[in-house]
Image (tube, rainbow, N blue to C red):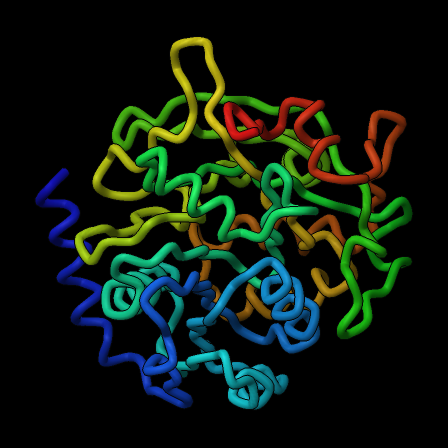
Amino acid sequence: MRLRRKRRLLRCLRRRRDLKAVQDNTNKIKENDILLMSVMRNEKIRLPYFLDYYRKLGINHFLCVDNNSDDGTHEYLSSQPDVSLWWTDVGYKNATFGLDWSNYLLRRYAHKHWVLTVDPDEFFIYPFCDTRPIRALTDWLDDTGVRSFGTMLIDMYPETGIMDAPYHEGQNPFEVAPWFDSGNFMITRNPTYGNLWIQGGARARVFFQNNPLKAPALNKIPLVKWHRRYAYVSSTHALLPRGLNQVYEEQGGEKTSGALLHAKLINTLGEKAKEELLRGQHYAASGEYKAYAKQLEDNPVFWNKWSEKYINWRQIEILGLMSKGNWA
């Protein structure tokens, strides 16, 4: 594992040459600032709400990589004073699906900072997030000696077909897609990294009903007190050193955990799936996007009689999808 981690770190140092600084505001990062890391392509429509959401949550600075967008993402991000932006036209797949870029920037700028690594369609919630900023959570994690914080990805969807509920720039996506599955999940343990592997939910039910084991993983560890020796090895599903993956209690108790509300299942997914199929830059020969493109032609409806409408984090905890543990 130590050798594997060193290889990851060496790889990210080599791939730093892919990145060209567009706007470097990292000199504004203060000692205790909480950072957000995101790699993206053609996400302009999401960015106004995304940045506003995380600023209100308490993020102090954004580290962003633009993978050759052509929809205005580059221009929008470079106009934001709390964003540091890098650009690259190198293939996403060649950079271990963006991990090499984020690992390098985390190594260089996030050392000893709490950092949240998310995609532009992922919205972090945690116990008391409606009344306590993210710093209250990270301060408590510091006090208890916890270095990493686990979440479950929850796919959100509209009541109608995806294409019948259009999303507009700057809009809260959960006004369009407020529903989610509260069950239908499978949990196993990854023997290599020791992390939980969670599958199921709405995408498994609709897109992978004939092969649920091919459904996307829903376990993520997005919030970490970073150290330059750390490295993500599979999206934000797993890290090295392996101890960072122990974010759930194994002896019958409950560790505090959160969730990522996933705003992928809105009308922008159709064009996104077509674009990513042409680019062929995603994991497993873009198999996930092949499943999307095939079934989106029929404008599937994800809602059913067991769907739950999102209210707040307390509802997610009651349903057992996150826990406040001993944080009171």
